[in-house]
Length: 170
Image (cartoon, rainbow, N blue to C red; front, side, top):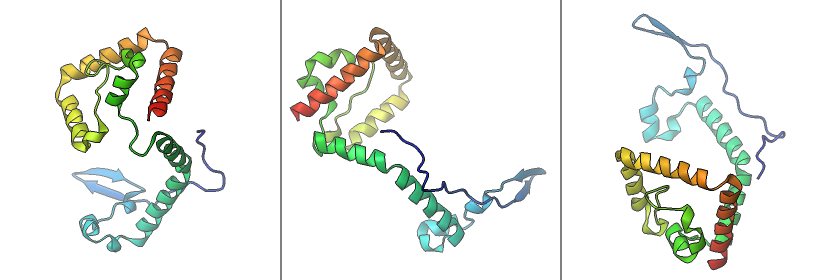
């Protein structure tokens, strides 16, 4: 997918509204301060009270982003349709496609989490990663080692083969 800015849709640009604020003798200029709703806590309870100018800008940004990301969303939908809505899991893949196991070593150059086990498993893996500096160092070194052992073309080819083999097995 080749992403580019659509010539038929202008990028929304926030209006510059000069604003100067002084706190503790420090002067701060912010031409976009108007985008911060002073009633943000009330807006969290009732979005209808958001300043219409802020809402209009946010809606324009959201519409633009949705339009620009349409190709990516379409591509993602094509991939998930091809693989099945649930998609294969990496652990299942590693068991079924043994030829590629050399690239993925759980806890050594990657962390594997079975998406079928739910979001809690992924969250636990991320917390484990955040809390364990030794694990982060090992994964970094393992990832660099994998990259050194397998040239880009070989690794990219292996990942493409793995995806194709997984899709065929699904």
